[in-house]
Length: 100
Image 1 (cartoon, rainbow, N blue to C red):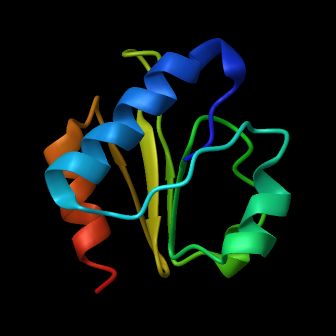
Image 2: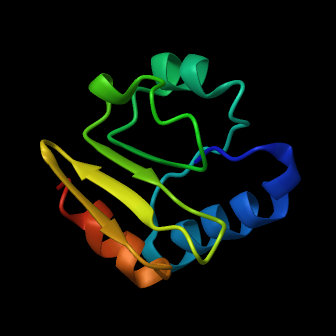
């Protein structure tokens, strides 16, 4: 999970929620460090705000989460792409579950 440090609290709360409620292994990062973290951890899922071009081809699920309620969240699962409006933690978990 990667967000600019401006949104650090948002990033950490989302990560904690996914860890506690769904028992996922979640690593957090800044956007600037995202590319290196993808190489290091080889995640199946990336949730981030911005930087949609970094390492996308190596990640099965890419969720570009919007922090602006007026903008959609963009999801890529394999070759499928779609947009969501203001997804909650359960909606994110449903997408992540499709990886298994």
